Length: 233
Image (cartoon, rainbow, N blue to C red; front, side, top):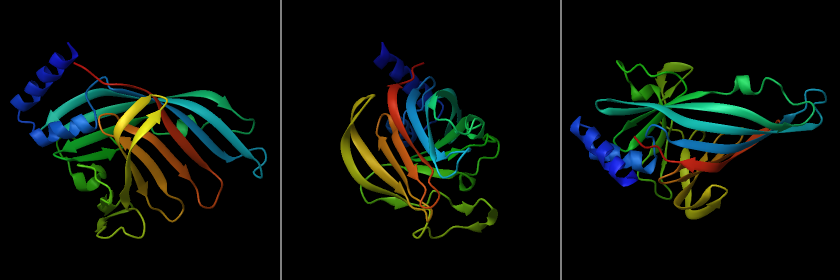
């Protein structure tokens, strides 16, 4: 039944002109409506009551694809995030959740997936204004600049991000995770002067883990996938 549903969806998209490359990309990064990722999110930062001490907290983060739309030539997926506090130390920032993004829009164009924390204007989509999150196919040593323009100065185009801002694929492996064992997984690094972002992405699943540790002030987080369920229509 599940396989039949996939082919029904596939036929529907092709019927309205969605390219085969876009369909292949959606297969690598599953963005059909109803797809859900549940993560354990562990964060640390200086304690509010005593900045010399470190306070830690654990959250459950649930990301769900709630809506999808095809606007030729783009496939658009809307992901909503729900945060739930599991445990926190004394001195933890009580308004942490309110400062976290709770919506993401993905725009798929062929083999590229762009992301935005702001709602997409479907009548005026300009991918130069979006982050290039993924450039498929993923292969070791491949790299790209997620930002094409400086968001603080949109008139300034970023031609070179080798020193800061570059995303690079550094390794391919099979991963054992709390959510299961996944093949075709890739380690990615986003290079920044104040600390690198480390990501593990598995084809057919999506983001399996994220990690960041600030190079100066002691704060950071580790996000690990604990449950994944593919969407179906």
